[in-house]
Amino acid sequence: MRTVDIDTPHGPARAHVDRASASRGALVLGHGAGGGVSSRDLQTARDVALSEGLDVVLVEQPYRAAGRRSPAPPAQLDAAWTAVLESLRHRELGGLPLVVGGRSSGARVACRTATATGAVGVLCLAFPLQPPRRASASSAPPSRLPELDEVTVPTLVVQGARDRFGVPPPRPNRTVALVSSDHGLRSDLAGVADAIRGWLPTVLS
Image (cartoon, rainbow, N blue to C red):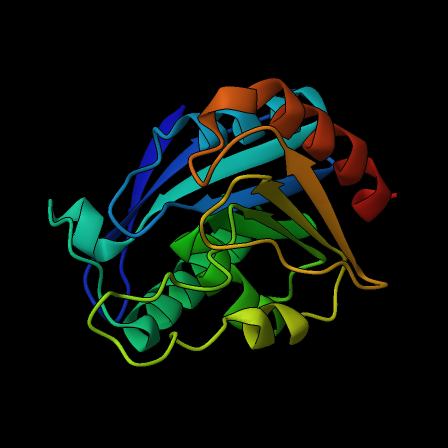
């Protein structure tokens, strides 16, 4: 693994780059809002992609690279992510086709920026579809489904059947794979791996 710091409009991000033996594409993943790139579902996705001949980059947003846990605003996350992908495309990953994605908040960022980054596919791990209503709130927060619906390239959503954020519906370009877990996806990593392994070759064929 090679670690690279990449300048963005909101401070340096950190990219952890693993190269496959014969690269036919690349998978670039971001972390959840309060977590990091060591989460078990991200590591599972990394291992599957490497075994399928894809380079893998796990990206730490600038706020996490600086040691903070509170996430930056969405516009800053999107700008930093886009800058990282632009740098990777011209340096570490050359002209490889890019599948982008992430866990929870990282999946949202990848969806919102899929067109800007030129992605050929999007992998969403535990997409946070509908935030739970707070006890003091008079109505539920808005659904994030429009962020998913804006993605026009093939998309895989790996979602826990017991996810408290709910489960998005499938669409012609969106596959939804349910695994026996909650939002953390930790209790069915084999199911996570199987879903990714079955989908990735269809994107890069």
